[in-house]
Amino acid sequence: MKTLKLIFALLALIFIVNCTSSKQMTAYTGDFKFEAIEFDVKDSNIKDLLITHMNDTKFKKGQSIKESTFHKERKRIVKLIRENNNPDFSIDKISFEIDTTLSKNKFSVKTIVLK
Image (cartoon, rainbow, N blue to C red):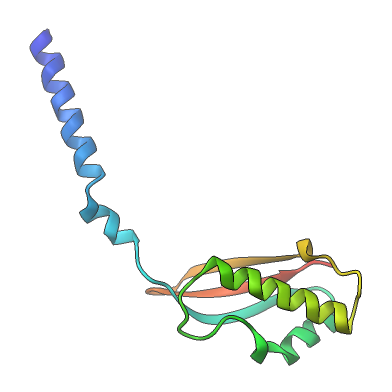
């Protein structure tokens, strides 16, 4: 019985080591590059404003995915809306969806702006 437990423990250890090997982990890592942006905005005035100023986005084609870029883009959008549409607009009304299924190592961003 002890031998059976020892064999089982050894097999479990081998399985765990194989599942956590660095070779397997690298299959899921990679540098994703920005490809496209889209807007999900219910307010047509805000959507038009964002499209008009789309060239000012902090996302640049080929740029790596970075959390800081999302913070900068959110601040840019808030400032734009406050200056042109609604001075009381809140930053928590902006969120992003990231799609990495676009193509290999590329991502797109959907900017969502709530009313």
